[in-house]
Length: 295
Image (cartoon, rainbow, N blue to C red; front, side):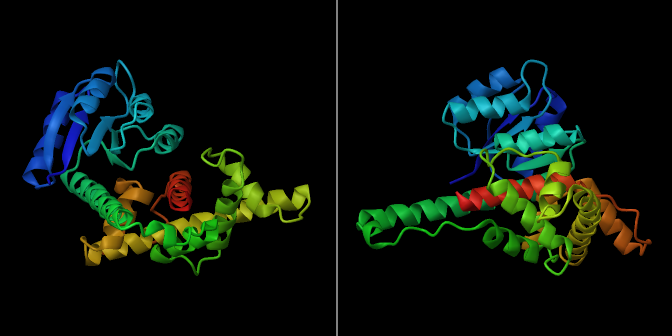
């Protein structure tokens, strides 16, 4: 069964480009298109696609509100947001609303293909699991299966950090501590300012002055760890662009432009220090992924 898409973007050129990439790369079929959020909601509810590509900024209704409305009305498909906006708060809000990935404008064929291939694989995996559950249910086997153990934050986070190649980094302990702090909050889905996370990881019985000093140290350790993760993913991408770890983690945890710049820096043997990373995006994505595996 072909994967279907609805594209919501007020830019006609972007819509045509995305449709062309989807069809030319064999990623599925375009079931509908809309030039605004309000029209897009109706198009999605009418077509019931597997994946929705939605622009972040549109004149009538932004992409975040469009995603929220669709979720509130029972749509259970996947969302990929398209935008040239670099505002960290808006990016974080979009992930909290329920998007899977970001595709950056101007649209890049390689990025679109890699992101949509990842979403398709995740969708197929979830369907496979659902089919298995239905098959087991038909034989009344669920009663004999013990309830699934609720995972602790560190049980979810550590394997991800291992995949990213940074479990040996001192900042990995800080990352785990931050995720444990977030999991204990009354609203586990809320994401606070980075300063609050640094202070939470630094607390541990320290006084106020010590907390402030340790928070700065944590910020530096965290930056080094995320930089190391970026370098690891870029190295894997240079060796094998179709490597599953690169395909999954590189566009999800990092801005694709940063990944490409790091790959270029490694290839040209440029000195360290020229790369940049979006630490808040990294932590927000990890937070969302952790909650998804815990719930």
